[in-house]
Amino acid sequence: MRVESSDGVNVAIHDFGGSGPRLLFSHATGFHAHCYQPIATRLSNEFTSFGLDHRGHGETPRPTDWQVDWDCYGDDATVAAEALAPEGGLVAFGHSMGGASLVMAALRNPELFDVIVAFEPIIFPQMMGRPGDDPSPMVTAARNRRDTFDSFEAAIDNYASKPPMQFFDPEILRAYVEYGFEPTDSSVTLRCAPEHEARTFEMGATHDLFERLPEIETRIVVVSGKVETERSPAGIAQRVADRLPNGSYIELPAGNHLSPFIDPGETAQLIRDAV
Figure 1 (cartoon, rainbow, N blue to C red):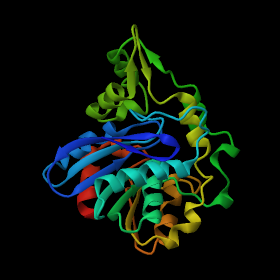
Figure 2: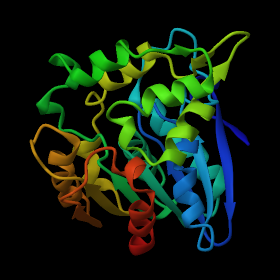
Figure 3: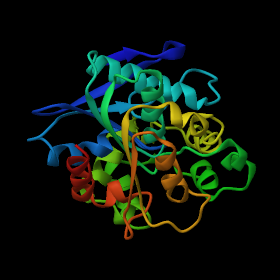
């Protein structure tokens, strides 16, 4: 289904099936909804799952000349959640950017969610500065990302041969390619343009969500991998949870920022435990 968001964007929402309460997946920067379908499959006896493609990712187009405003990712999450649960009571899992966008939606509409599981959400104090102020390996990597391959299989073979994607669950890696690339006459091309991904990383700490966390009533479980530095999504995660009136925090000592793609079974269990 498609739902109209800000700037005239029609957000794509994918139905992953299952039975039970509705569960919404909100993806990380550079990825898309179908990367989380293997997690949804593991929960199919407990939830009816859906995945959101944010603007510029998957099957949701990026507005022409749009320079990236994270509040608009919040718009996308809000309209998707309202379409799926107009009476509220939604369960949601958000990863990185997708976690921040869900928390933005909870700020705007306190009745939307029963619980959000936010895996290393990108929510930084503005005084820490925005990641784009310093050279960032993630920004550089995004800008240099190869965006065209001869075929889907060639792309899968390439990613499976080197980190970090060589550690992904094979089903998730295949979903990333098959739903994240668009076929042309002679090749396949990334739907999320490298420059769009890079700009999203650069603008990740320009919103004021950290300062507004005490206003949010929704129960939110903040999850991180191993904490190594404060100036990282894992390093800030407990501070995010502590500022939330109904927040709690879980650290996975063996985990990292991409853990939901490495161990979908563990992520499914996190969602079960939260509910």
